[in-house]
Amino acid sequence: MPIVNIQVLQGRPENKIKDLIGSVTDTVANTLEVPKERVRVIVTEVPKSHWGIGGVAVSDTPGR
Image 1 (cartoon, helix red, strand yellow):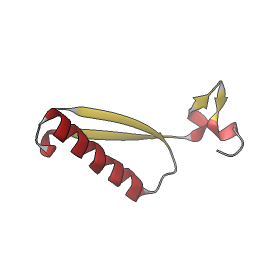
Image 2 (cartoon, rainbow, N blue to C red; image 1 turned 180 degrees about the horizontal axis):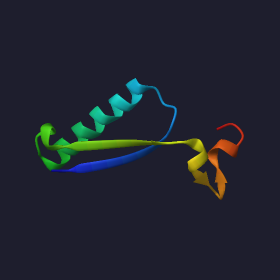
Image 3 (tube, rainbow, N blue to C red; image 1 turned 30 degrees about the horizontal axis):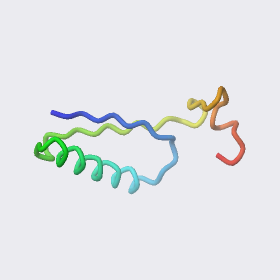
């Protein structure tokens, strides 16, 4: 059973997360030639204050 873990910054619309789950499921199922029902996708939303880029939290980065 393939398991895919995806981490994204918090704040995307729920429908976009659902689209992501569907697209990743289709890609994994097709690539590995397994039924879609066997694919598991876990999406974890991380607060911007808990995601650092270049030593700075995204919440402290202008324009993000």
